[in-house]
Length: 345
Length: 279
Image 1 (spheres, helix red, strand yellow):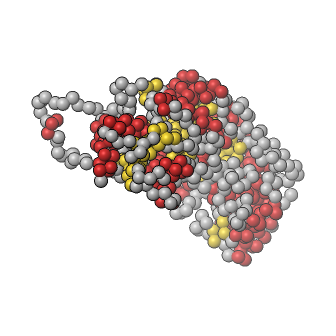
Image 2: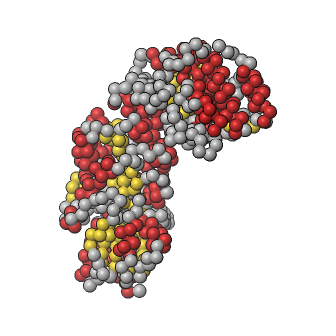
Image 3: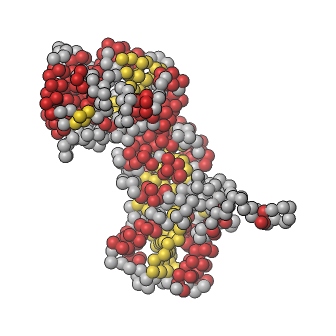
């Protein structure tokens, strides 16, 4: 999709009237204009957890402000550790702290935890089953800064790591509920983090986060969208849009990617005659989509059709987030269009 | 500071550690034996002069933590743990066998007294930083020792940890570097030049001592200095050691990173070690 760097876009040449240009801010909001949000749900939830649990400490690699850990730092300055822009050290020191009975909450961007510090999470933490929580901002395509900051393959990498629990929450309320839940789970956890003003969407579905559980948020006769993270928000919006077109779409939210709630997924996919679509904010290689596909192939359950919505197996472009979400087919509009097309096939 | 064996000299402890290591090597017919012989004096002083522990309770909260960053030196640490009676001597024959608590590479989940899993190099010093910070939180007076190798100086993670230890002024952290001048691909300085090593750590805010790591008196002084040093800074003891120390015909082998030892040579090596110091 990338054009040659020697080819200048025609609409950006000269002084003629330009369309209002969008920007590729590092921290782009995923909230819609009129969507209710809560600020820094992770930072507040971790601060509340620390009130009740002396073992809790927070570690940052020079990104406290950008992972909402600054809220925790302000509330519990003596329990905050700045490890500098050194992600290997971040994971090693957390391992050492966990060995001494603390519960370190380690924060950075998802790209740095996965690509840069994989060996240290794997051997210093996961192999030892240490109680370290790795909470990472900018998962998948949530920044327009290009591949240096887009963690489009973090789940694919981490799914291969034994002992590691992987959580991809959808909204502010789920993050708030997930923090105490993963604190109570003894062992290493990787959680993808939506930071800043995070949308609130699940409360109206009476949803409660349970570690390891997929939840049917909305039932539907024609198609079932299986999704995690911010894509559940999009799936719910898409389902509402599809309803206006006479299409009945269900949404199964799967916030725990590993271990996967195979029983619920199989039970839902066993219902006959539905198109199953897995929607994820991640490359279609090695994420939730392929995990669900493998689960189906290992069972006798076969849906009428199976499709994936996700990021392409490519290094993505830089740009404004709404533009990119449209370009790569993970915006609500594109989800609706794709599902209509598949149902017409 | 030593808790057990009041009348056994440190050189004799070192000799026994070498002997245990050679016997384990003989069982398997191979092993990182040159490193074990080279580091035996350091381990003797660490376990029988410097560190506090309870042989019958390896996870006793008041112990000093001794981290083996170099997982492939496991045979050396097992020998020290056997001598310290943390591991029973009759377990020595299981070294490297299926179901053994003494696997070829050191792993925390397998072995009493093995504080960390160290096979992937460059992990130890950073874990030591985290443990030192946590011990301070707990108000503990224990020290964290991290034994790592000159080869691990190639790993960037070691330097991340060195910088943070200086930044946090971790006066409960004592690094021990085994500079034996040999890595997998050949002489360490030829692989990647890490000298001048002392000034590097000094510049990172560490209290630095550099000694002959096979000189027991020098080791005793260095460990004492490291523990008693008054300034709020991490401490490092750079130990220049000789690969295969104590067995001249093995010392003489040019490529001794992973020694091939003929079956009859094990007995000869043990005979040479036994002829050494006693009492």
